[in-house]
Length: 137
Image 1 (cartoon, rainbow, N blue to C red):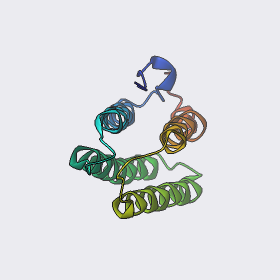
Image 2: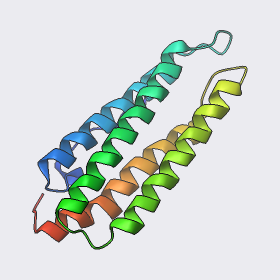
Image 3: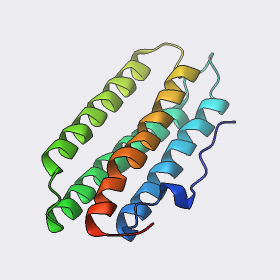
Image 4: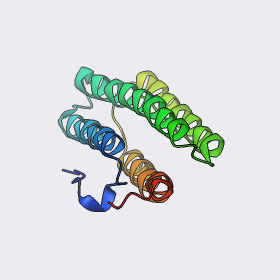
């Protein structure tokens, strides 16, 4: 089963943001686990719930992270906010498609996309926030 392990390599050096990211990793791991236990013959309410929890945690995290960026006068806040909006749109589309799919399953490509989405955003965008503060992860 696919799982993401939280490591210090994912830390941005801002404790409150890192804690949010750990919660997002946990939510994504819950989606992975629910995907494994989903039966194609029977809709998976567990997977549906896990996807909705990932969406809610993402929404809360993005609002929180944007607040942190405002507090520290992060110069790329407007660009970062657009990335968050794009990620939420993609997640909403994914969940809508899942809800309309008679099999109620997620493909391995979709699972990989979710993982890449989260890890890439942390490693290539969020670490810039920590660097702006002088934080060392």
